[in-house]
Image (cartoon, rainbow, N blue to C red):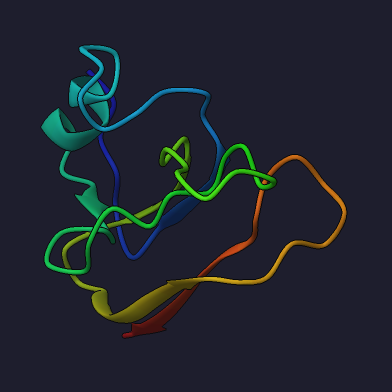
Amino acid sequence: MLQIDGPAILAGDLNLTRQSPKFQPLLDVGLVDTRLGHGIAGTWPSALPFRVGIDHILHTPDIQTCSIEVSDSTGSDHRPLIARLKL
C-alpha cells in the first residue's frame, strides 16, 4: 500500500466522481477530498449548467481546505477547480 510522508497535494482530471469505487483507494491512503463540506463543485462538461466533479484536489490531513470554487469556462471542456489550502 502507498504511504505518504509529509504534506502532499494530488490535483487533476481523474475522470471519476467521488462515488466511484476507484476513488476510495485515494481516501484509504489518507488523502482528504477538498470537496468535503464545500459542495459538489462540478467541473465537467463546462458548457452545461449541470456538471459532475471529475476533476479533484486531494491533500494529506496536515493541510486544511479553506475554500474551493469552480471558475468560469476557459474554453476547455472542463472548468477550473480552485482550492485555497493552508499548511
